[in-house]
Image 1 (cartoon, helix red, strand yellow):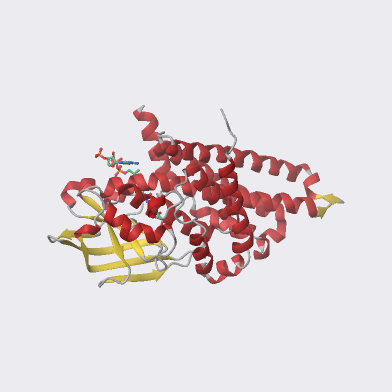
Image 2 (image 1 turned 90 degrees about the vertical axis):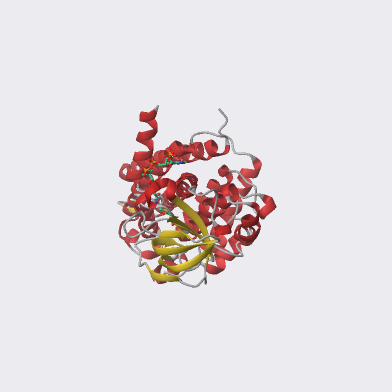
Length: 380
Ligand code: CAA
């Protein structure tokens, strides 16, 4: 078994690391504080190719594999998990979804702009009463011949206001349950489409999360993705890949918190020596390093499965379940290693601890991942 990364993978990882340190670190505390979207930084990420990494070069994408994508996600997330969720949604939910399932005309019109960051995408599935239970959504799209009429409300939408193009999942025939669901490309500014309230969040505060309202929005039929009734499978398959990106985000948050704790423990003195010389701290570092390494193996395996025809519904769910727990545990311990300094904003670890929590919630809660995993192992 070869655990070595290729030269190209290492270059991409290093480029992401450099970008995060040089462009994202400055101002990350203030953006979190003010809930300020990193617009200039996201624009640069688009120019550098970080927003459409896996999409086809024909449509402006990087044509890279999922391994390259998770390496970049980890590095960006170490420094700024708000920027990395924007990156994750645009790459794995929007660009990958369109690249894989949209028709040529849709790709030409929409994907080419999303891969370069000229436009930003959002993925709209969750509703006030349907977050985990994706078939129970109430948003409807009624077939009117050459167009659909879209009505309903979506909640907790990442890039809610900053996006230009929205992939909206809606019921077209309630009787058919999940076979009566479709996915549509909706543009910001269309009549009847309103951006709702912005959420005041615990973490990833630099990303903008909104509710969205659709009131008799006319959606041309050519904006439906795939055959009639394909929407639920589109959402599930896209989310399966998206979960690998969020697992990488969780891994990055954990690794970022660990690296800060490690450095701090080498300079902070107590009882006459650097605190890393106390077993109480050294053992914490050992536990953090071990769990992060295990999480990285799961994330890489899931990415490899996606690139090589493996069952990434299963390995992606396992990676997200475990890496998000590691992000939570490690970031809490990193605050502990920092003591009082860990509880104030300047040292970054309190932000990473707050950011970690969302990785156990979005793109399927930890409980949803356990449903996916247990169904898969029981089926076998
Ligand atoms: N790939 C392809 N098809 C799939 C699939 C997958 N991964 N998972 C399910 N399906 C198909 C099934 O094969 C089945 O199709 P058939 O009837 O043709 O056989 C159909 O979908 C229904 O499957 P289930 O009966 O398993 O569906 P379910 O209603 O029991 O739901 C679930 C399963 C796993 C719980 C699913 O509802 C789920 O994943 N829920 C969580 C949704 C979620 O992740 N929400 C997060 C919102 S997005 C977000 O957070 C983005 C952001 O902004 C950051």
